[in-house]
Amino acid sequence: LKVTNPALKFSAPESNSVQTLANELDVVVLRDNTLYLIECKAGKKFSDQADNFTTKLDSLRDTLGGIKGKGLLISQYALNPSSEKRAHEYQIKTLSGSAALKNLKPILSEWLACN
Image (tube, rainbow, N blue to C red; front, side):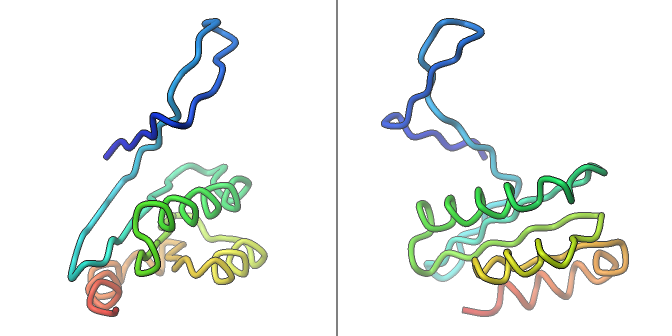
């Protein structure tokens, strides 16, 4: 899902133009008036950028989902402890590492069932 906010614009130096800020979301679920946003990352350099993705997910969850919105960050690579802590502080659930992904279906079912 691609979301844009026409009110948010930025200058694109490479094209000398002003463009609208757009974000892409991997999975979006609306269940019982709660918006669930899931960001999936597979790159090896993810752990270096995990805090950026957590901040993005936190912002989009609050903007699009309001006070009931939920966020989940999934990665095939494990998060470092400081990134896990940051996600927890932002109330973003994390699922990372190959061992955690083996239980993806029951974990997602449980997460979507909680309000």
